[in-house]
Picture (cartoon, rainbow, N blue to C red):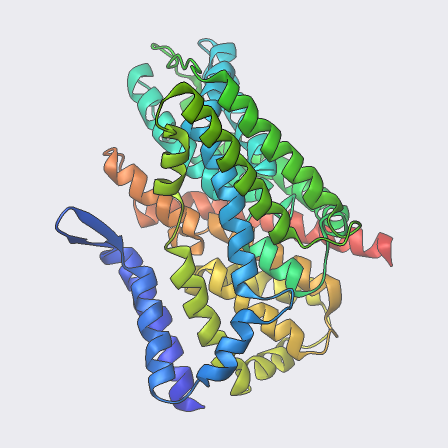
Length: 437
């Protein structure tokens, strides 16, 4: 048991250090993220040392259960592809341009419109897709408009990682925790809606108070004009995303698993888009962009962390943590514990770990613990760059654009926004659970 815990702790510590000091390694012209290589190495070491039974791990990966990590990865990657397809066509930049144009020369209006746009899009796509889509746009716009990008980058990041709580598809952590506990799309939304709206409003208020002085400066430039050239493909993408979202919402009622819905939607999108490309005698540029931009590194990362958690579970570590947290005050305990744990080991492995912890209690902590952990996994991303993959990607993009935003800068804004947002979300969840009870 001790050796297993040491290997897992060293793996997580090395992963954090890699994110902070050497996030990528370059082999020729290829740049590779290091965090998943380290977690993969940790999983391989556990298997080599005999601390994990390869047969049991293999059975878990192909098991017909809600917490099958392969199914969850298929669901998340499929939804990402549907969103990236629209981004490749310029859809998100187009909507952002409309919002920025309406703001005219007022930074306060611009700040509000950007927050609303990112919030709405995040609800129906995912936080990672929005971060990848909007961050470069904000960097370019701020440079052209000769304004400080910090308020807008902070607003984008906070909105994307707060409103991602709304739907089960908004964050891979939502998907994992909800499906592991047998919560369907509608059942999730019924409880998550109020905490999301309440915390989203508080987050905006905290951001505005923090940046209100900077927002008084006038805008000297104009938003980048984005013209969507391939409107047919755009509507194909919008329809597929919309239909997929609706089917996910009713999947439990028509007895179809969510991962099947999403993978079928992607298959249909590729088929129809391929036919359009052949008819036009053109390359399917948007599809090729999806294939290139899909976050494949999530596959070895999630599977490796799953192996680590399987080992900790078999060694009785998760049960010990469950006993430590106890059954009393589950919203407060699981919400704060998952929030800070996200910033120690990242929110995806944290969710895998806490899912096992909740399961080890025999369901004693119940729905309050599950949704409190969902809240912690989303809002935990606001505290430090390590809290979520979105934070890691966001920091890398800023570095590429020459925008200085260090760890301490992130922490200062994170503490001012994340803590009141977390308190509001957990308080709203407590009210929801009181009403349900």
